[in-house]
Length: 283
Figure 1 (cartoon, rainbow, N blue to C red):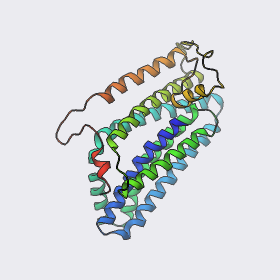
Figure 2: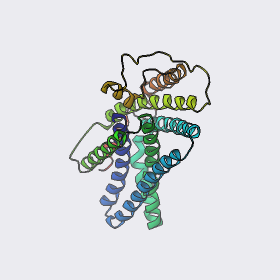
Figure 3: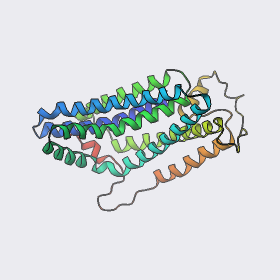
Figure 4: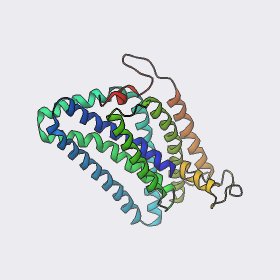
């Protein structure tokens, strides 16, 4: 549940910040008459994201067992790529996020109503599609319980509440620190998703090497224990992983963590954290 909560919180807050920037720009430029079009674009993006998540679930449910394993593997690997790109993109581009969005919305206002709807739709749809794919991949590794959906819903609700409080200036948090810590946790979660994707490739008959168990902790981690469920839900950790799964886990986790923790170069306009733009976005 915690992994799904983290995904909902992190991705939901990114989308909420984007919406708050657009709304704040229209309010402060006395263009409240265009707010309805922004919300229409946001609603369309949310519907598209929910539909994409439903399509993934429907497609996986109507495949035979081998094809379902391969479909889940492809979804897990794609989710790993997307979340890695998102973490590093947010780390480098967030400083310009507010200015870029305002410039694009200003251009859209000059082009007409349709352009405003499309601009709001595209700004939110990217986050929504990414979230749907990431949630689907995380839920596959957590089994058939409703815990992932509950955790994800709580994360989205928390993100909306935080975004609203930030917009109203009722809350001030260090967004740079927030995105750094959630980025670190998401890298660990993504390593587990990638490991589960490799597990599906083995189950689907694509990978045939190093499939023997790397170790066996099933005696110390019984399946019905709460801590076993916690490790599985957060990190996709299984007590008897194969050697190829552990190699994949380490091969993703170590270099990505090193790159993420590596200090950024201070070029023109560079910043060590992504806090500046999101924190001041609605103002």
